[in-house]
Length: 252
Image 1: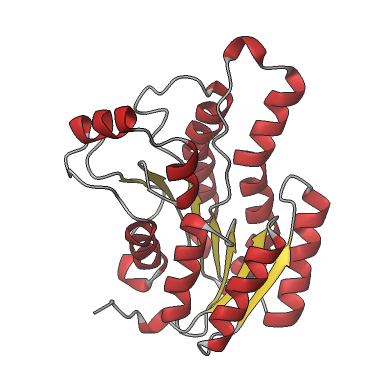
Image 2: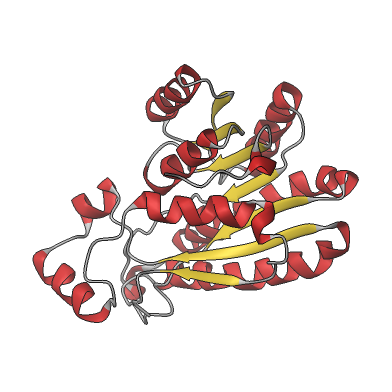
């Protein structure tokens, strides 16, 4: 039976990258808590389908197609969500894209694009919701990083650079906004077996290497990460801030 956190009932939660994969699992878990769930994603059909699924289950759910690399569009999306549902009380900065790239091929434009996709929007989403969290004297921000840089993974330098930067962003925001009772934490997922990961990157060789290094000798599922995310957003984690939590089955 899933844990229930009464303080999350009715909370307005924004999940970026919420249409599929880890983000969709997180959205479903917050829906199970009775939260109001807002989904931002570039994937229109998947986002609308998930929002409808959540609404049919009794959840107040809303999807907006937002390109998070377009900061004015991100700000406008948050303004629309605020008008419809009230201030964002929990921000889940989940959206990312782990495209592989050879160092020799990276151009300045590609570098900037990868930072925009994986880090920049986290700051500006937080910036947009923090004033009302301050006014309410409370709020939660959870930024998603990655274990890729801790594991020394190659072939994606711009991605690992941006994901390691999530820690610095998290600690700084937690320090600045802790006096307003706003908690800011980071979660570093290991290799979570979303459909995309299985289709694009999983091979018998890579899975064998993962099982050699990971303490838990099984695939990790998106819902396992979602359950921890919901806990960290709840008052059960009320003393947790400025931290970086690794959820990877003991990989790194």
